[in-house]
Structures are given as structure tokens and as C-alpha cells.
Image (cartoon, rainbow, N blue to C red; front, side, top):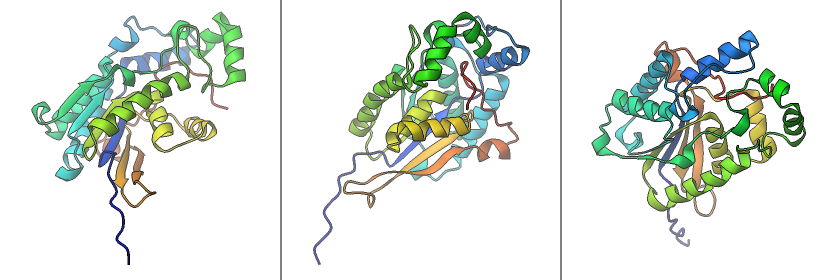
Length: 261
């Protein structure tokens, strides 16, 4: 019987993708929508919005879960969005896990930032419809995957920059254990790329539910999958660490979105 050909591993052994904890922006958006306001009352730039107290609690809870994993499953590379809420989530997670920064590779990568919303930034759904009805109509016709607001990005634009992140991960971090801490749209677009989803499939996932704050999506490398091996999902939006710690699960979008059909 012929020996099986050697498979060269190009992927990390483990890849975790985590959305940041609840932010002050999430809270402000929820209040604005509930009150029927046109503008979300938050003065900070989107990249400077901090975690809420609950978001800090969520980051600590998921960090303790990472700290309880076997050493061979704990992250030794952390890549995070430079936005304050994502970086704070990553730092609190590592501290709660007992993983010292000096023992890992920690990098902030602007390609992991949240989708940019251009002139629609800080507007509620009602505000968008009232101030830019033609854009609301165009978005409804084109769909969020391809719609690009003036000065902002479509999902395709986010996917384009994430392709280079994944290329970097396969080039520089193969066989390692990589944790990515980012944002809701970023998490879904990473899933689109890693799981080879179609537009319809990823939008259906998005339609079913928002990505929970500090939810963990985890992939393990399986050399037996395909001719070259691939990452296989082991966890999808996993929130048990939060519920076990008594931290409420939240899933507010970072930004105004049209109601899901």
C-alpha cells in the first residue's frame, strides 16, 4: 500500500475569531433606536469608543475560559483591530487568561477594523431614512454585501482587506494558535473567507442573529480534509463562558443597520 503523501500545513493549528465586548457605542445606539432618535448620542470617534462596564465583564469571562484550555490550544499569537474596544477586549482577555504579553506575539492590524460607514456614521435607521432616503432605497435594492455608502465600505471592501490578513496568517503563523479580536462585520467576513461561504449563505447567517459580544468562533486544522488540509469549525459564536460567569450575552450591532427581512 502506497504511503500517504506528506501534507504541508499552511494554516494555524487553531484560529479563534472573537468579537469585542459590549461597547459604549452599542449601548448608545440601542438607546437612540429605542427612543426614535435620528442620531446616536456619542461624541467619540468610532475608533475611540471604549468598552462598557458589561463589555469589560464579558472580556474577563471569555479570558478565563481561554485560560482553562490546554496549553496546546491557548493562543500564542493575538491580532486585534486597533479600535479601543477591540484592543481593550484583547488585553483584558489575556490578563484574565493568565497569558503574559511577553510570552506571545501581539499585533494591532488596521485591516481588522470595523466596516467604515462614511456619511451614515452615527445615524440610526430612522435617521438614514429621513436624511438620505435615496441611499436607503439603493441599499435595499443592492443589498449590504455590495452597497457602499459615500465615504464608507461595502462588505466586499472589508473582505478584500481581510484576504491579505489571511494570506499573512498562512505565511507567518502556520502551525501556531492565533486569536483575532475584531468587530461584527469583520467576524462575519472572516467566516465568509475561511468557510468558503457564498453571499447568500453569509447574509443568511447575518440575518438570523447578530454576532454576540465576546462570542468565540474557533477553527482547528484538520490534515485529513481535502488534499492540503483545512481549518474546520469547532465553535461558532460560542458564548457559554459568558453565561457560566453570569455575564449577560449582548449582540447589539456596532452601527445602524436596516431591519433584517
